[in-house]
Image (cartoon, rainbow over all chains, first blue to last red):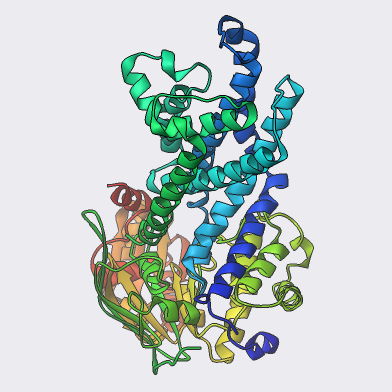
Length: 276
Length: 326
C-alpha cells in the first residue's frame, strides 16, 4: 500500500481546453471499444435502412415513376437521409441506456470536465453512425444505386453527411437524456421522427403530397438533407420552398442550429439529471 | 490538491427530498481528518443519498455540505479532486476488461499511457485480481467487480475515501481483501467515511459510529459507547416444552432481569456481566433441573440497536422500495 500512498495527486486539471480534448478522446475510445464487443448495436443503425431499401426497391418502387430519373437513383438519397435521421433514435436509445450505467457516476465524481463526458458519448455514437452509413451506402451501390458524382460533389457530399450525422447525434444524445427510459425514446422516435423521414421526399416527390403534409415537408430538415444528397448525386432539383431550392446551404444551417441548441441543452440536462 | 481544513467532512442541516419522501432530513455530520467514521443504518436510512451528495452526484435541497472545507455545490470541482466514492453498485464500464477500466480511470486522472498501465498492474496485484483482470467486467462476479471498483477509487490516494456498503453481498474472501485494504489506508492517514448495515463492520473499522434512521442522526459515539447505549448482551434460554418454560420463568425471575417470550418458549435475560451472567443462568437452570434446548449469549444486533434507540424496528427493504417508488 505504500506504493499507493506515495503516489501524488492528479497532476492535471480537467478545466483546460487541452484536458477537455484529451478526456474526450479517452472517453470516445472507450465507447468505440464497445462496437466489436457488442456488435448488435451496429445492427440497430443498419437494420431499418436495409428493410426500407428492400421494401421500396423491390415491392413499392415498381408502382412509383418519377420523370427523368431511375427510381433507384431517386430513392437511395432518400434512404441516406432517412438513415441519418434514424441516427437520432439510435443515439437517443444508446444514451438513455448508457446514462443509467454506474460508470457514468464514476466519471461525474472525477475531476474531469463534464462536457467531455457528453462529447465522448457523442463522438462514440457518431462513429457508430458513420460505420452504419458506410454499410448502407455500400449496400446501395451493390443493389443498383448509380450516383453521378464529380470529385468536388463527392467531397461536398461527404462533408455534408459528416456534419449532418454530428448534428443529429447531438440531437439524439439530448433526447436520450430528456426521456425517462430507452423505451420512451423508441416511442418518441416512432411517433415524431419516423413520420418526418417519410414526409421528407424520401420515397415520393413532395410536390405531389396533399396540402398539410406538403407544408410540413417543405420545412422538414430531413427534406433539405434528402434534396441536397439528390442534387449532389443526380443534379436533381426540388422546388417548393427556399430550403428545397437551396438544400446544401439549408442543411448546413440546420446542422449549425441543431448543434447550437442541443449541445448546451445536453450539458445543462446532464448536470441536472441525476443531481435533481 | 486544493487547500483543506481540519474537518474532512462537515454537513449542516443537510436535506434531500425525493418528491414527498425526505431521504435525508437536516443531517449534521462531522468527520475529522484522518479518522474513520461509519454511517450505520438499515436500508432506506439515507446513507447512500448522503454520500452521493458529498460526492457531488446529488444536489442537496437544503443545508450545506463541505469536504475539506469546500462546498459540494459551489466548489464541486475542488470537492471532486478530494473525494473518491466507491458505491454499492460497481461503477465500471462493463464492456471493458477490469484492467482496461483501471487504465482508463488512471488516464482520465492525467497519467500517461505507461504510467496508467503501471498503476493498473499495481492495483491488480494489490487486490489479488490477476486471475480475472483481463476478463470483461460484465462477466465478473459481484465480489470481483467490487474489488476492481475499490481499486479504481484508489488510483490517486484520495483525501477522503467514501465507501458505500463496501462489503454488502460480498463473499468472505472479497470481504477480507476489502477490510485489509481499508485498514492499510487508515494506517496511511486517509479519512474514511464508511456506510454499512453491519454493526460488526462498524465495530471492526470505525473510530466513531453515527447511527442514522429516516435520514437523521439517532445516536453517535465510539463503537463501545454506542453499544452501551444500544443495550447490553443477553442470554437467551429456550425451554424444551411449555411446562419447562413455566418453571424456567419462575426459576429466573427475581434473580435476573428477564423478558419472557412464550410464543418461542424463550426467556431472554439481561446480561450486563456477559459471560459471568451466562454461567450464572446456566447454573440456575442446572440446579432446578429444567429441560432446555438452548442457552446462548447473544450480542446486540442492529435490530436491537434500532429497537433501543428509535423505538421501532428497522424498515424492511420492501417498505423502502415503496417509498422510493412513491
